[in-house]
Image (cartoon, rainbow, N blue to C red; front, top):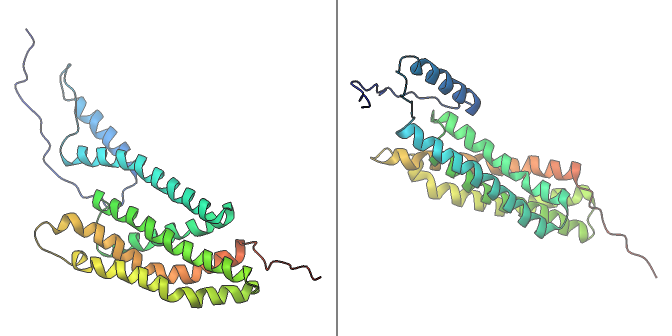
Length: 228
């Protein structure tokens, strides 16, 4: 007859590990597992359960969903522009928006969570939309006959209001959730902090860094017209 366990070992201590890389967290978990398994009898096993297991399962699913989302965004950008160079220029707005979300989490002293990850995914679409507007406006101005430098300045002037409106609208809509302290706010607050932080910093980067990248990498020039 198989002997039943007479004692169960349960860990109820919670740790807060903000911004710990996945490789270090995996190493720490493996070392802890080896240490605990030494105190268990043969036939026992160690399983991770509770919030930590749910977090790991969600991260595994996001590791599949997020690359698919980015690939679909880049595919749509390529369909819109037709060139790989313009696709990458418009797609470069995505990491620019992520910078603000990371800064927002750091300033709020909050750790990365599934809610924050969903907030980063939400930033992908807003950033891609602004990238399309800026790069598309520059291409239209070049095709209309403006020189390279003049087209960059005119792009910043024309796109300042649309970029500010899209970012401010998303930011203002989530401000109440970002500053909420009511019961249950810990679930929605990381998402709101990421979106608000990303949208506050994004207009500066979209209107400074993105035009600079366009001016440096874009090869689009004024079309040459043949005279009769």
